[in-house]
Amino acid sequence: MIVAEVGGPVDAFPSAAHLSAWAGLAPGQHESAGQRKPVRIPPGQRHLRTVLVQCAWAAVRQRPTYLAAQFAHLQPRLGKKRAIVAVAHSLRVSLYYMLRNGVPYADLGPAPFAPRDDARVMRRALTQLERQGYQVTLTRPVA
Image (cartoon, rainbow, N blue to C red; front, side, top):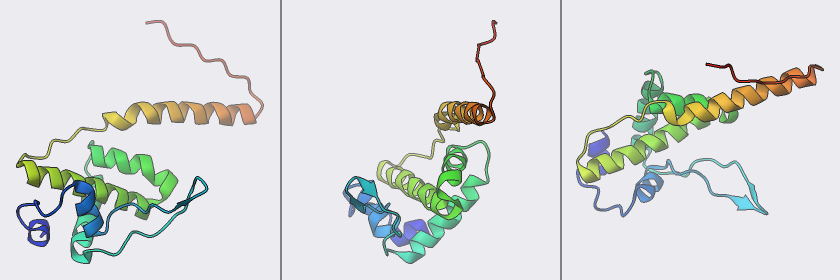
């Protein structure tokens, strides 16, 4: 379906960003006075967008993968629907380079999100304990 909508060669699109905008999966860029405003995704190729969102839902249910880790990282902050559109956008960019270069998909795994998530979990736990009146001192275990 994706190849049928886009066409085999992606030479008509100079970059992955152009293809994402055409598909209607480009993130909104409304900013004023340094504040980013939440906006809807732009209208685009609705059939392609629908297929990519369905593929993104299937991809985030596979563990452990980069797309599942990306969804788990974004979902608490953005909500499920916005996070799945972000995953669909990442999938669209990957598909662009796969079609352009003729290479198979290579998953990065969940590692790119692991260090940031661990640090965030630790900071959040410390903040919660300090709000409850505890003094916390962290020491690394001696190995």
